[in-house]
Length: 606
Ligand code: G6P
Image (cartoon, rainbow, N blue to C red; front, side, top):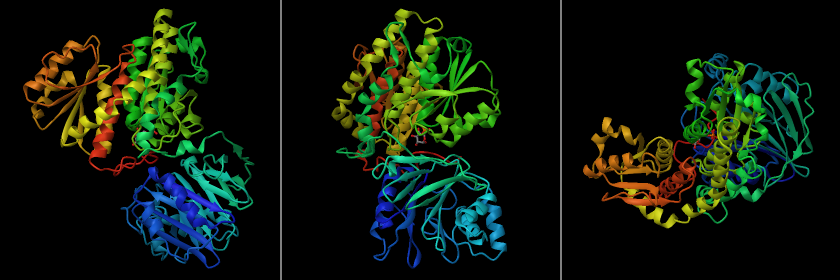
């Protein structure tokens, strides 16, 4: 949530900062701003709206070779020009950009007001600028340290000061900050996406760490200013992976990338001989694996729904009781942490604060947590005892698609490994491995029907309100389908167990309220079809995502067939058409696909 960029070097900073902000816009996009430090001091341009509005409105004279920038997702105060970052002190000598939340902002704001400071925004961040300005330390590092010393909360922060014109000081506590090393120039960003076009030689700051960045290099230190001697390393990333290429949106690109992404998460992890999975990163031997009595999965949003699919896989394949819970709720009910429970945190970004705090709560109570995480080296990945990297590649669109698919496959691998040290037979293990191997190709087959799905989606987009229904394996699929639909089409989409319809929601069924039903070929097909007849009898329009050999009888419905795999793996193939329905409904309605209103890609505040 929110993005930070910074630059120090021989070039004009503003164009580089604006380019970096464009690449971070998925993290927050209600307002943005840049500050540059030139011969006449600090200049700031900031406003509500998108980065392109900021770029269009930038003053002609905006020179400076040191600069910081920010794209915001409002927490304290509405999205207006005054609340946009960077924030400055009264004299305009200090400029600050900040991600995170300052918990004692109200008290600090009161104190500053009592001291005669005129606060010009509603933000928590503004206090940092004033605190830095008020410090009497003789270095910028000392002044930032003094400011941070009185702050409680989370931050990734970058600070410039007119009296120290060669540098930016950055600090991290809970919000990522990365330094990128160039040729006699240095970059700063909260996300790799803003750096990879300039450099792949980077250093991640740790929590509690600060750094001074000048054109010639950087130094890192703790808040007591003792050195941490951090060195930059060169990482292996393809900068093109961060571009949308020929696709009209990142979401479209990411949907279409799923066959290759699925291959990557499976690569090297299938053991055909023993019919099991190899997951070296779990850091658990067979004895420890056998001792697991329960699996508890935690995630937010789509990661929570795929967690429900994962719980189903674990129960079916390993016969271990498993369930998923929203990480955002877990910590607040003083959860009982058991030594023989395996906790699994699921997160694309590895940054979602609720999931991170859940991991910390479990570990504080002595529980074992593994992570299913996409972003390598992210906070959740680092906090866990072990895990499975998802190798989906960078995911930029707010609505998760390829990462979600790889989460499902990560769960399939985990369930297979857990199952094979227990009662899952070699034959079943091999059956599932064959199924997993077929999946990337079958994913491609579903995506190839995009044109048909686009037509169906245009019809659904007309409805103000929709139901998504499924049972058992199909229910989390329906939940994920409704989530995707509502977040990008802004239509009211509600997921229900098909079996629960007659206990309430059937009252809402009418010709104006379509139902998207998930009906796999499994032991519940007949019951599912019977429930769909009840909807049809109330003249509710139906779209049925199903398998070719499912007989819908006389049912009047638009039918979407997906290929069959092994019954346990079918949920992911059933999920794919729902991604495309949401995508094309939102496109039909003319919405900004990658940046749905009010949302942000990584939710790093509680
Ligand atoms: C946000 C996004 C969702 C995502 C969730 C979890 O709410 O809008 O699409 O599923 O965060 O993100 P994570 O990075 O932890 O998977």
